[in-house]
Length: 299
Image (cartoon, rainbow, N blue to C red; front, top):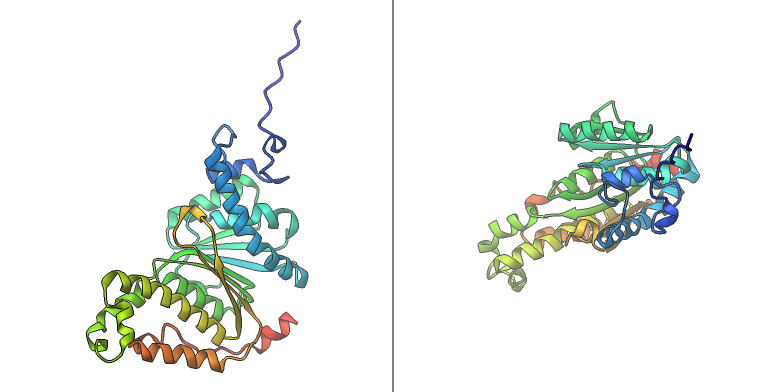
């Protein structure tokens, strides 16, 4: 009787050197980095390179958390399909931090359900997902009173500010942000433009509508950085190249260091007053919560 033919093996990572040992091929298919038959093309390789580029910024922060305690928590706000969370879990948490967990927060219930199903299918027990707003997540018993890292990638408009508020309330050690579609500040600049015209030559920076939009976007991130510094964080701003082919490439990484806060708070408030944005002081608040317990836990 002839020997039974052997099944053709699935593409091995060895034949695709871009894929790191132990990576889930099934996850890469879900992220459309691999085709459904497990192959890569030039576009896939570019996507994977972008994934690794993002990961190289976050991995050192995760290692620092892991060194302090194995059961740390990362909360991903505006998680969407939770691509970031799944990538981090697959590359780091799965084997390097099995006691830590990733919590995805998303307001669209159907995406939460799909993420839960995928985590179960991939065997990622340290991932959980909740259908919550940012405001609800601050007080929800589903999340711990203190969180070690907060991420928010392409959180649109004020969702980034909501994530910052959550991180400050949760005494977060690391904050990683890729802001997107910053429209709120530009809208206030535009609303108050007629009052500002003639009072200062700086108004020329945002007199034309396209400049209002661009300057408003830039200014929003400047105010966010000052706000984080006013809460004791050390802030680094760099470029996130090509993630999801987006033009929104600014990456803000904040590390809590209990730094002096008076000067950045003064500069933030002076900027708001100089540009006619006093009504936004509640958005870019500078009064810091008590950090004593957090500082002790980080030493």
